[in-house]
Image 1: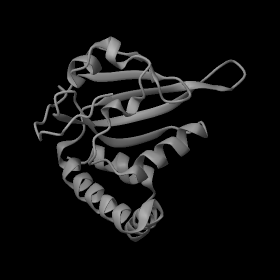
Image 2: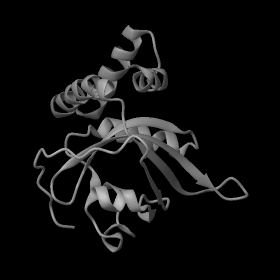
Image 3: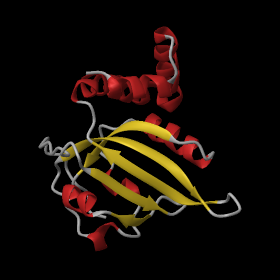
Image 4: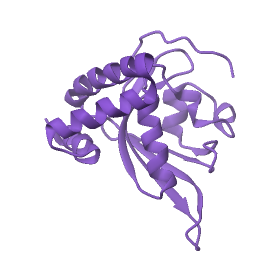
Length: 171
C-alpha cells in the first residue's frame, strides 16, 4: 500500500448516509458499500482484501483501536468516533458501531461496521481527547494512554460506552 499524506481537507457524510463494511477475522475488508468507496476515494478493488487500516488516519490513537478490537473479539459491540484517511489525503469523521459476526455455533467469522455522521459538537471534545491520548501514547505508550482515558472517565463518573453515546446524543 502506498503511503498517503494527510492534507487536512475534510469531507463530510450527509445526515442520512451510512457507511457499511465487513471484514474477516484478520480485519481484511470483505464488503464495502458505495458510500464507503466514494468517500474514501478508493476503488472497490483497492479496498477488498485489504486491511481496514487502509483508511486509518494518523490522528487516531492506537488506544481507541485496541479498545475496539478487544471488545469485538469478545463478541461485544462498541461505538466509537473514528477519523478516517481518504486516498487523496483528505479525511472524514464517523460515529461507528462495530460488532462481531458469528456463525450458527457462535464462532466469530468476521466483523461488521455501520458508520454514520457524527454529532459535530461531540467532535470538538473527541478531537481534544484524541490529541491528549496521542500525546500520552508518545510519552508513555498505550498503557499510559489507557490510564489517562480510565482516569478521565472515572472523574466524569461514567463508562466509555455512556460517554460516547451521550456525546452523540448531545446537541
